Image (cartoon, rainbow, N blue to C red; front, top):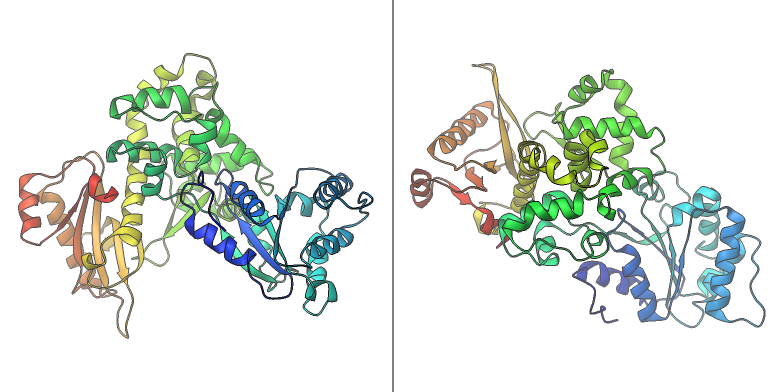
Length: 487
């Protein structure tokens, strides 16, 4: 099946879907597709159904009886039987869907499956029974049933533990946001600094350019501020309220105010569990459940400290939500008044850099080290890239490391392939190199990692002075600027 010409990238996802759908082996099979909203899951699945002549059904938030009526009408229109379908239960629906594959492989998509399961909690068990290995209807069918959902907390449980469908799926596909390089290509931005600024706000969600910003991209670096005002902070555009809708659409988030406060605490720079609890004036165990739910929903991510096992920090996974909480939510009443966005943005520059752009730049540097760096840069294969704090017991101080590249352990201590520092607005010099050298010596004394091959990395959005460039020429440090991140 040829990928549609208007589909940007998604080569991996298209290959996985078409390989699953076109499998000629007998027997109906089940696949699960998940991912946060606005990533293009529906576009992918509809394209697969169009290419293979399959059946697509998009569920809505409705009662079980109404959903049965809707899928009866949809299947009637698709199959054109002698008399219309009038299903009285989902077992009948499943047998009809399996019957679609009696003559060959065919994709059958149920999109937004969590809506159906919420109205009828028995539905996963009904599907389990329908695709039972030795059941005749399943054996004689080559239906490729794809269940899709945006509620990550629900979709994460559908195949786990003692769930009815555990062990039944032949495909588990997660549709992720575009990474920072692909996002720059998608937004058609060639200036690396501008690309990272835009990415720090809208991330790699395709719909934010095509539908939400109506194709409006910054004309150049000088247009960035005006673009933020006329798209993201403009109450007349869909992007303005999108962060609130993303939270409201998660079925597990019942006490919305508490979850908003947790995200607000993280956006304000409180990245540890204790710091978040103090910000909310609650005990740490009181916020354990909402934080776990936000993690399951894919809105909060826990970063384990690579140097201290008992320490973790949290970051907001979706850039638009982080921007909303750091910049927009504190002055929401002002922003809702037309014409106020330019004034608010003008006084938000420092907070944007420190709470949004700086942390995002650090994460992009870690992503680059793990996924894009030339393999020859490290003397070994990166198994993990994170960050952490190195404690100096002699001076009773801690030193933050923005980028730590850990290799694969081969019988001894894990190799620390590289440590790095990331500065968005600072021109980096010899002092930054000396700090990294001191931290490397400290890690060597602590004895947890093998530092014999540890390289030093300096990431900067503002450039480097002559002294550190000379050190780079001598091989003491690797300098990574914005064009190199995007090269």
